[in-house]
Length: 193
Image (cartoon, rainbow, N blue to C red; front, side):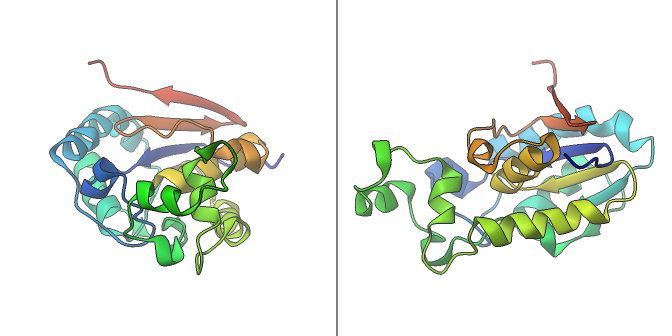
């Protein structure tokens, strides 16, 4: 297992398409009122971390930039295209129920989101996605805050923790929290409700 610097990972807040179970991939939809509240909770959690002046990286997609503007409370950050969500090919913008209806062959009928995205026609595929994430991780030089996406976070967290990629799609994928990764271990930081 490779050793990476300490990472605080924030998934973007809930979006209109998250709420509708519509695949976003590298398309975009705005945060819902719940998504704004998610980012506000993250702001509370990440405030003490920001005082340590970590490197901060954000996906350039609109939902992550919108989350970062709220959660990071004006802290400077760098956009990095390697943080964009996995591309879902022809399925981007489609409802999950429509895709599942077209694929009765899926074992158990309940694939993980990562399994859906991985098999999308014209999509990026898991190998290329994982290589992009590894490239980003290998460039980290110190403690870092990362604002990105759900599937991106699952694959990155599995990589940092030394888990098999088959386990990545089964990791939690919460919004409104911060995943802290250090020395191959993960701690979930949540705001008091």
